[in-house]
Length: 157
Image (cartoon, rainbow, N blue to C red):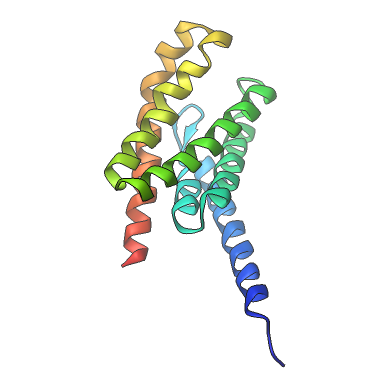
């Protein structure tokens, strides 16, 4: 029996994405600070290894899993907004990784998911929210992005 290689490649990709989403669920339980967790590492890794679209799917679902395990502390609609932001960040992370290098991608990913993400919520929650969440988000973002690059380079070799 002859198998279609495109079908097998599709099954492999779906399986890999499913496993990375499951790893995001595990990472969602490893909290760095409050709702800041290791849920984004598989999403950033997926962006690097499988492409922007898959990275966006994995990272946004990873955030929603973290929000779910934390009881949606900012409200369900705000967390969906954050999930969309994170999908965009994963897309841009892959773009900067390909366009420049891993150091620039780590810097951009950290800044986007750290201070810029906190700034985007100032109109809703105020400057006190930014002051309280800027450092934890930036630290968590750096850890997630750095681990994703580290794992990707380790597997690449």
